[in-house]
Image (cartoon, rainbow, N blue to C red; front, top):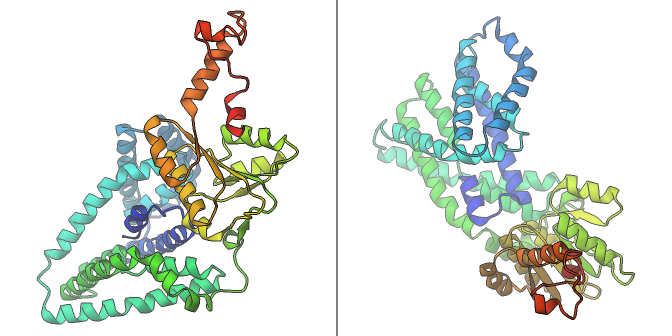
Amino acid sequence: FAVKVLEEKGEMDSIYGRTAIGILIMQDIVAVVFLAISAGKVPSSWAVVLFLIVVPVRWLLLRFMDRAGHEELLVLFGLSVALGGAQVFDMFNIKGDLGALILGVLLAQHQNASGLAKSLLGFKDLFLVGFFLSIGLRGIPTLEALLVAGLLVAVVPLKSALFFWLLTKFRMRSRTSFLSALTLSNYSEFGLIIAAIGAANGWISDAWLVTIAVALALSFVAASPVNTAAHALYERYHDWLMQFQHTRRLLEEEQIGTGDATVVVFGMGRIGTQAYDTLNARSAEHVLGIDVAPEVVERHRKAGRNVIKASATDTDFGSRLHLEHGTLRLILLTMPLSVENAAAATMLKNNGYTGRISALVKYDDEIDMLKEAGVTRVFNLYTEAGAGFAADACRGLIPLGASDAKEHGVLLPATPASERLAS
């Protein structure tokens, strides 16, 4: 549920989104360990072999994943690892759920891990629907069950308040803590799985299982409008919530200022780096680079560039950004996706920036979107790259000067594309 909410709001990569998902993952890990223990199985004496071969198996799985590509074969690979791995662990009297979790951890660092997770998401949703259906078949909830479910839902705000208090104690901003707590303001699907295990083992009755299922569903219904209005609720209660904010904050939660920078470059890829270097060569300009990838930021810092880690599309970044309007004159948006550039332009306008914004675009039909977001100048990457490539290819082939270039239909730009973007 939390993942769906964050995806719909486009805030999966925000600090509060990652915090909420991290908490849920830890809960799920504990739940899986509980499932393994609840099976009541004594691991085979050969189970130690599984942990001795983890390293070679990981290397083999990563090689298979390299060759699986990005289409149907990757889906087949993921299903084989999940179901086949669970079966192998079951052979050693270890709960298969735990085995699948361990194999997932082994593959987590692969470059295609996120693609594999997305490709399996449809299957997960299908299995989850089937699981909910099986719970519903246990019986029709009685009036007593509905009343108890209502009481359980009434306790959810207390759970959210405790999360908020706990996160502020960990020196997170009140905004991050509040939004994370609202994202966690429902009962977990994994809790229902635990209840199902309890009913299967005779620890609780089927009536309690149905009651918990109803409480879970009602918590989804209650949490949906609350999460939709999360930002508005924070603005409304901002002053009151700020009194819980810690005087010291995590480094990732500190205020971000542009300092004496006159130009800011969002996205320090190849084009952004070239634009940065071109502008930085001008003695009158002080350039600041911003990129979301920590390894990219570290590489640029080692090269002597002034680059900080942040995501322009992260709503948390917008609330932490402090623009020095007196010195800042130009912002370049060189991120690969036009929607990211548009989101960054909107964020800058909302923060009161009124200066020039230049952005990259790949397709002409995306220009209007950027203009509406507040971009003052759009640079078509493909058009400029094609013109520059043709000009460069023709140099030395046809002895043309600037005066007769038009006659032969050849465009001879004076500077490379990245320098023209900087200009």
